[in-house]
Length: 354
Ligand code: MRU
Image (tube, helix red, strand yellow):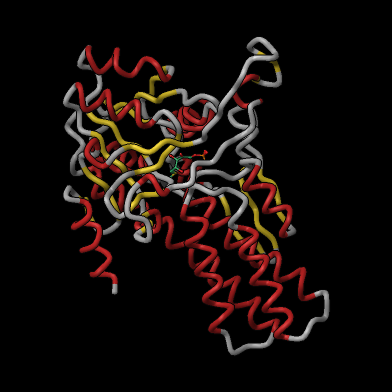
């Protein structure tokens, strides 16, 4: 029987709209929602109906097509259309600031707009085709990441992951969970420990959902438990995804990842980041330059709409943290595993792309 992950696409362009899994409903309901307008896509990204860096990137690319379709109805000149569309493209990137895949994918659409020699209809068609190409490439890239990563998974390993870097954070297959999937295909004795991932519980709500749907043995733990299990020798490696990686390897990922990395270092457990090259932002030297998204206080003060603390307590809610490069054993990409010194290995892999 085909696995769950190969039967679904988290986000897909269909005719003249974007169809995506509504991730705010998981694990209670698995439901698709159609996004038919540019502003609706902006809100879907901001409100995390779609989430996970690569999925957000594709959503941004779809958003450009949706805005273009709307502008077409305004009967503008070609120049006016292009200028207004380029403003919308920049607007989309403000929906979530940390995951660089959003800026990367939207930039790809900008190139299509700027290089096109077509009329308005032609530009829209080219944008659609480019968005579909990004979808297909995402799955192919994740499978390569999975295969490179599987080679460093010890036999019978217990793999800890944080947040959700799975099929549901990408178009399909996943990055960190792509590594798990490829490893599991070779060795069904591996298992996963999934951090709950407060405040939004992507680990509990999404990672455990998609892994158990694929029959991969999974144990849910709360975020504070990781060092307890590491000390007991029950974790053999950590694999997480990434939202933005600086030129020196510093990696932004879901808040709490840094704590896991410190605990892994203390216990001599390999800590891997799995991410496509589109997550590497060579324009920034270190993680200090990464903008960390601040999210609503309600994500911390409430669970399922119910307040869980004193109503007037102070709250801070950064969505991501930055794991320093010296805590990272390797960065698993579609071009192989990058190793320290990351300034060199990252620069080298980008040179090869040119
Ligand atoms: O806030 P989210 O759910 O979008 O955060 C997701 C993560 O931090 C993922 O680990 C990251 O985007 C990589 S997804 C392949």
